[in-house]
Length: 188
Image (cartoon, rainbow, N blue to C red; front, top):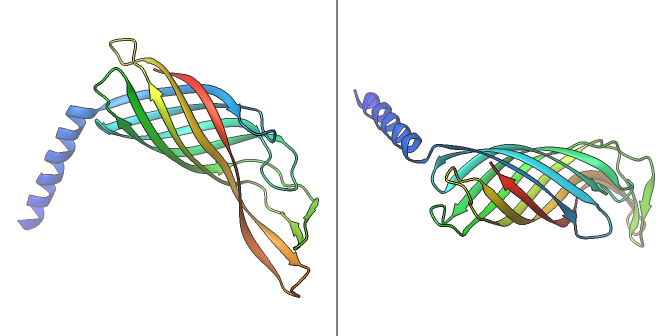
C-alpha cells in the first residue's frame, strides 16, 4: 500500500510536468573557433523541455579543430548529450546556459610531442567532448522560433603516454585541449 502512494505521487508529478512544460525544440547554428588552431564550427541539437526552465537534448557538432598536441587541424565530428537551463523563458529577451558531454571522433597521429619536461605520445583514436556555453535568444514567432547567439567552450579530453626527462618512470596521463567558439543560429 505504501509503495502505491509513491507510484501515484510520481505519476501525478510526471503528468503535471509534461502538461505545463512539454516542448520539443531544434537548434541549428554555425560559428568560428576563436584561436588559430581551429576554424568553422557547426552544430544541431534536438532539445526536450520537461519543465519550463530545464531542457535535455542530443546533438551533433562538426568543427575544424586540433584534437591533440600531435594531430594537425582536422574536421572533427562530435556526438553529445546536453543539459540546458533556460533563463526568463516567458520573456522576449531570453538567456540560456548549457553543458554538453559526448565523444569526439578522429584518428590519432603517430607523431611525438616534446617539451622541456619530456616526450609525449597519443595512441588513442577519439576523445571525450566537454562543452560549456552561455547564450541569448530572441523569439520572433508565436511558436517560439527565433535567432540566438552563443559563446561556448569546445574541448577534447584524451590520454597519452609521458616519458619524463627528470624521472625514469613513464606513465599515462590525461590531457584537455580546448578553445572558445562563437556561434549564431536559429531555434525551431
